Image 1: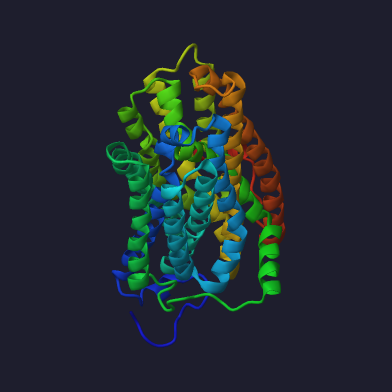
Image 2 (image 1 turned 180 degrees about the vertical axis):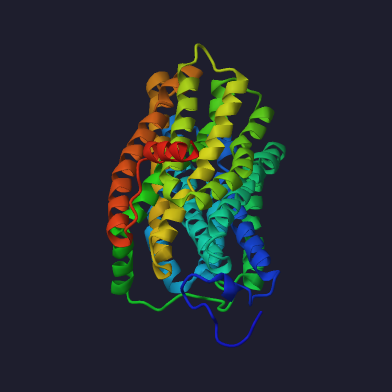
Amino acid sequence: MSSGAPPFDGGPPTTQALRLVSRGLPSLVFGLAVLAYMIAVTQRSSLGVAGVDAADRFAASATALSTLGVMQLAVYAAMQVPVGMLLDRFGATRLILAGAIGMAVGQTVVALAPSLEVAVLGRVLVGAGDATTFVSGLRILAAWFPPRRVPIMQQWFGNLGQIGQFLSAVPFATLLRLTDWTTAFLSTAALSAIVIVAGVAGLRDTPWRRFAGEPVSIGGAFAKLGAALARPGTRLGFWSHFSTQFPGTVFGLLWGFPIMVQGLGIDPRLAAVLVVAPVVAGMLIGPFIGLATARWPLRRSNLVIGVAGLQTACWVACIVWPGQPPLWWFLLTLVVTGAGGTGSNIGFDFARTFNPAASYGSASGIVNIGGFTASSATFLLIGIGVDLVTGGGAPTWEAFRFALWAIPLVTGLGIIGLLAERRRTRSRYAAEEGVVVAPLWTAVMRRIRRRR
């Protein structure tokens, strides 16, 4: 690492400045950030394969069981604004370490919980700790890689982190089956110790500063938050994340396993594998979405709309399919759902490009609220829908068929918000930069005419 005055001090790093950094350091820091996010996803999604066990352990109905996921994600979403402000104040490394400690404590509470109420408290702590990790990792990427590469690295970061869902779906599920609830959840809590040791050893906020936070008053922090929220590009990122991220989260964190085992009658061992199908699909599709985002930055919203519409269409087909959908179609739906999860990262690219670097923490926190607000609402709507059909009894596919209408309902709300904020964003962009973004069909027709 070079010495002397840093050529980067809070603003986006230039390619020329980053050439002064030792070649292997960005990859090392990227790997450590991915490790932290991977463990956070493991902690977050561990409940997904334990949903049936949780219902038995706490004698909970579908609506009561949904409170485990709702409270975790509600806290996650609510924490995004203060986390964004804390990120600007204290820097990414400190927040990642604090989050790892919070998740370890939360999973320990879940492991030892004698009742559903105590388990909910533990998942609240997990949600609070988890809330610090993703946006902090995004801040690190923005500081260690050239602006042109950041959208691609964001996709790799988001997708590699989802390996944590595989860890919860297969090793954790196996451990839960071979041992017991307490042992399995205490084991996941211990994983956070790895993040703490690795973070202390090697994480750095920027190539030139270990901790890159800036002292700011409470009033100044709220002013920065208000300025980020006032930018329509930030709100466009919020609705982009809202529209695309939640089906995969709802499936992976709680309802996927019950839908497959109790609703579709899939063998639990196969269901444990299928839980990670969206993750694998997202890892394969994500780099292409990142390349498309970097290649056509003025058409990012069209990409979001396309991904959201496609995954919603697949879920609606599952709902209206006569009888139960065949396994091949359900698997295709999970693949498309994985594309939705990775497509939600486009929302953070809106936050990055429409905000100054010093406000990126606040802006990305606002964006991250979107998908998890949608997820919390969908968690609860599915639980209520299942109980309305079954009267609190064992879920059936007919009950899930009714409850899953929550997905197109919430997606429709998100697309309405996205279209409204896209219009405001494009108007402001035209006024400030002089760039007029024509409708997609107009741009396509112009390109066709040029080729002719």
